Amino acid sequence: MADTKKKLRNPFRKRPKEKRLNRSVAGNGILFFLMAVCGVFMALPLVMIINNSLKPLDEIFQFPPKIFVRNPTLENFSDLFVLMNNSWVPFSRYILNTIIITGLGMVGHVICASLAAYPLAKHHFPGKGILFSMVVLSMMFSWTVTQIPQYIIISWLGINNTYAALILPAFSFGMGLYLMKQFMEQLPDSLMESARLDGASEWKIFWSIVMPNVKPAWLTLAIFQFQQMWGNTGGLFLRNEELKPLQYALQQITAGGTARAGAAAAVTFIVAAVPIIFFLICQSNVLETMTTSGMKD
Amino acid sequence: MNRKKKKMSLSAKRSRTGFLFILPWLIGFIWFYARSLFMSVQFSLSDLSVSPGGGYTLDFVGLDNFLYAFRAHATYKQVLTTSVGNMLIDVPLITFFSLFMAILLNRKFRGRTLVRAIFFLPVILNSEAIVDAMDLARNMMSGGLSSASAEMAQASSGGMGIAYYMEMFGSLGIPEFLIVYLMGAVTRVSDIINASGVQIIIFIAALQSVPGSMYEVAKIEGATTYETFWKVTFPMVMPHIITNIVYTVVDSFTQSDVVELAYNTAFTESNYGLSSVFSLCSTAITCLILVIVCGAIQKRTFYYN
Image (cartoon, rainbow over all chains, first blue to last red):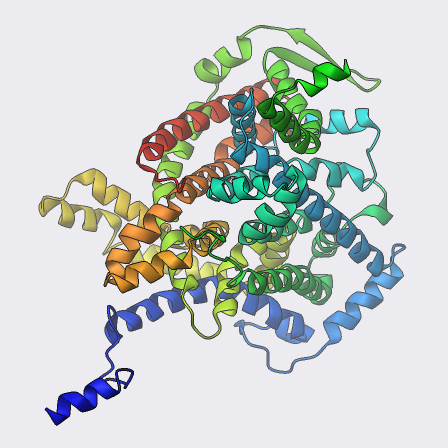
């Protein structure tokens, strides 16, 4: 009797054997092992890139090859800047070009795609179905093949050999619209209705209700688009050397072959590192941003 | 005139605002993409010749290019069927793998951001220039190594080959197509891991848009993790399974051999008409597959509203 009383007095007392429900230690172990194996598969190239960029020349050519660097130096990076300062476009110019193209292309795409996705997901108007199937159709089409019509259109618009040739088409990729629409569709209608009843304009609803609620979606899209734009070499559309992006510089250095192996390793590191850092920043912002959508039903 | 505007119904007004929202995207889309799609159709129906002073002329030839592609071209049909086959193997595997990974990566543990980044790496490292640079590095590192590995591959192909497993499982009464599928899956593990970066991210975002209160309720009602997954998580991410299937299909097709064939036809053989036919036909087939798959899933999809 006294025993039960004691129990009743302190209902929040920790139970003597706190057992975690639903998952065993073995299960956790297996999961950890699986993730570790997959993770190693994926991380290996990056480990190689980092190590290669720190290797002195003799270690790069060493046989049998070692993954990890023995005597790390920053020689490759200084070599790279010397090499690039001797070329007639300074290396910083390539970096600037890439930042302009990537930044504007990404921001523009996220805004345009979200703007367009909102009515497609939440409004009803004639032609909506056709418009959306057109978007999906356009995604199916591989743009490597349509480079020629693309080129014709871009030179017809007169934006050939400018940043706009890469930035403007990026605004209207179908993928982003599709992604945003899928996420916005899941927002409860009543959320928008209540905002409307409170007299919010459509713009206000979009900007302060829809967008904050789909933050994981547009951050994902930003990551995705950043990667797309960052990987762009400018290819057909940019002819002037001083407009070309960083990826093009990397290609040129790599084409130099073994003579520039050190510099190539350094540029590869720079080119790969920035998207990863961007990803890390965005991902940590995605965390726990989702509210319970503000509904009380 | 002014009066008429006032008479516009609420729904009409709303649809007009909606249209205004779409406009910036639509203009870009029509300018850059719809036009080039249209031009591709045009090319596929004609014989394109580049004029010496710049520009080009089109001679209308009707369906000749299509007939040539399917009747006379040496490899097109074969490449197309293998690409479609590969895609059909990859899509379910990638979808389930990435859902699985996303659920794991959505749990709270130390160093989660880092692990997520690792799984996103292949997407970042997939750009052309980085692949080139990596190839160069590999060549330098393994000048003599490649011959050694070739020897090893030759030596190992004798004993435990795929044929051996096929026979063993076949004698156990497992249907052959299943074995072929699984074998295909096993040999593609690294491809599949590499191809599922974006899908994992999409699923993580999807998992985070599931209201936390639902899990709370499930917990209070005493649901196990297993039940919570099938009754809460799975229905809530179902719409994004379609998103991911669409993305995977598009991604695997734009990187398939068909596109490469079309690209080579256009840029090395300068046969733009035939190249357009190739890509149009594969687009049509992809769309068909998507319509079937999504139609089948859509019926079972639960939408929150």
